[in-house]
View 1 (spheres, protein in one colour):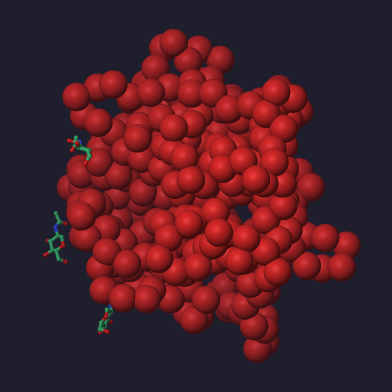
View 2 (tube, rainbow, N blue to C red):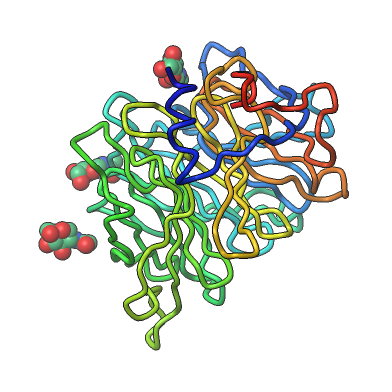
Length: 343
Ligand SMILES: *[C@@H]1O[C@H](CO)[C@@H](O)[C@H](O)[C@H]1NC(C)=O
Ligand SMILES: *[C@@H]1O[C@H](CO)[C@@H](O)[C@H](O)[C@H]1NC(C)=O
Ligand SMILES: *[C@@H]1O[C@H](CO)[C@@H](O)[C@H](O)[C@H]1NC(C)=O
């Protein structure tokens, strides 16, 4: 039945057959804490910083020493979970904390901190920079190119994107568009993953199962705003309503293609064709089978060596970190759209 629905979509958004990339679990949480990983970011050292929506501790993971597991970096007060994380300047990160209700998928006391991990420091320098009182939860984070004191944060409960000033702590709703909106009461989720790149704000909308972008710029008074009356552009849609195949956190490769965590168990790559249209391909895991990647929450390319830069790390709600080797497709797993394994 799900297979049939996918075929029904083909005329609108081609979900073409792609070769799958080799994917392996590099970390599986087996602690009594049952960590649900939420987001990650790669440091210049190659280490990953990993947030969990049911732990107040920011953890580090070294892919080169995966057997060492997670290393705690900092435990935040007045919270029980961490959400979005982004690098704002070299080895300085902004991260969201709060009391996260995993049932209704809403947060309280959502707070933004900066964590300075520059190796010249003997210990992380952690600063509370903003409380965002009117948000329902803060999820995906993005930097604002050209303005290191600003970040954007997706609020999937309100279906809006906040701008947060890391110096003054002030917050304002920067973007509020039907393509970001939330279609129902909690635990419904709207805009989720966000990133600004090349004068576009790219974003996923969980329940709408869409991936979109909108042209943005810094206004004269240094606010992130939409360019003129520019409309949001729909780039991809995973499924008709009623299926839990949602886009979540995402990253870009060097060619500017989007790689998006896609529930139930996949990574989707979205490529712009010469004619301007977009093509979405499942490139790791499977939409219908969560046995390879179990509920992916976010993805990030590694940093450091060429091998790391070609490795896409995936966090999951099942406490996994997976490595997808994007350097060459797995020859043993040539994907055929008729094989459920591949879509
Ligand atoms: C994290 O969430 C899982 C799944 O809901 C739960 O089993 C576990 O107890 C939670 N861990 C903590 C530390 O709250
Ligand atoms: C959490 O938020 C509530 C409601 O805004 C507030 O009353 C309370 O003081 C906050 N708690 C902490 C520990 O910041
Ligand atoms: C929060 O929302 C209320 C009601 O809309 C508004 O009066 C208040 O100024 C807002 N606070 C902030 C900090 O945005």
